[in-house]
Length: 106
Image (tube, rainbow, N blue to C red; front, side):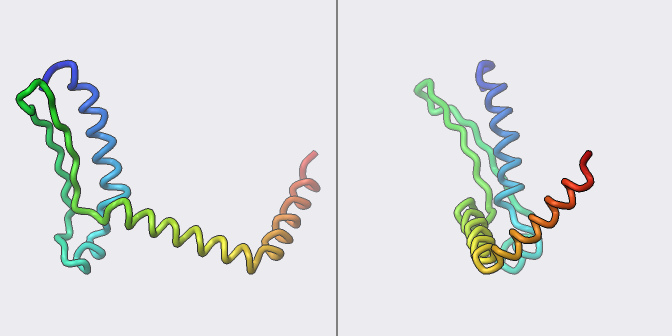
């Protein structure tokens, strides 16, 4: 690997592995239920293309960002629906908390 690429490839590699572990690789029980090995795999490659160019790639066998995004969207929808149906109750509780804080504050 050319010296001028080492630092950026290192920094990107660290972030790529972090993202794969945090967002992509499922818990062992989830992986086993999906027919995967309990341990996730992350593969980083850096290769010369021969024409002076290089290719850096990151792959993992996790759930993928699309599935993670769907999970986040579902959580957001549930939160919105809960606020629609319980909005007045939440607002009232926040008002009570706000009033209590104002009474304690000097």
